[in-house]
Image (cartoon, rainbow, N blue to C red; front, side, top):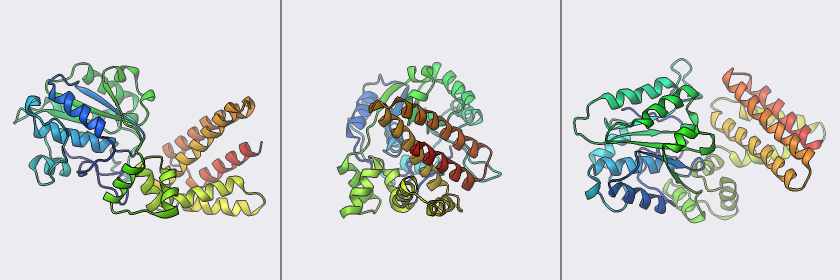
Length: 345
């Protein structure tokens, strides 16, 4: 089944092609032992922040299972896949008949990635399982991510999880397990991954060809919070500059700030700016939630309530802008005005 390769950042290796994983030895050991026991769960919920290796781990485990279809004779640990092995080549090229990667599809008209995994995508899983495997091998579905399932798609997945086909395995990825349907969570074995520590982060970035040292390394790793994808956005997409400009706009005074706001909005709404716009959206959302949390901890309940309400408003504004393709620059300027007003109140 063909795997989509959209959403891969510049400098990154697509998870299906990535032969290296750093910082998750404990999770790898658990998966290997769980599978080898012959009593492994049919659905594993791989949880953790974005960009820490969840998808790479899922493809890595899928490679392990398809390479060793008999659990009793499988290795006791997950080894680095051999790039030239038949299973690895099939997975990397999206040509494996035993693996289906469900992710947000691309809109054929606009060429943009859709905002959700639709029920039509989930129906592919039904067809996938209905086909007879010529090898009698496992059938594996990677849902990347379950956070992107719309309601109809989530209900359709639930039906399959309730009555899974024989020799089927679901690897369900999520950045926010608390937002999933409780019925989906209850039918999966949870496996939580933690953000990468400094050592694994340096190893992961070095494996991608990034040797970051000195003061810039401290800034990147501090802002990345253990996420390789965040580090790539900071290094390759001007993320550090976006953070600096955002902080300056919120802290600045006087008419010159309008000029800075427009400059930032122009950068975020330019051609091919999807990645940095998403980065900014997440930055703004985290800022508002952080302000609400800080105010609550300090006992300023009025300010906490104001920022909590603003958090909902920011999410709604960004969601509507994306859904209706509203002018991105005006959305950013309006959002910055709201943040500045809340900050000054």
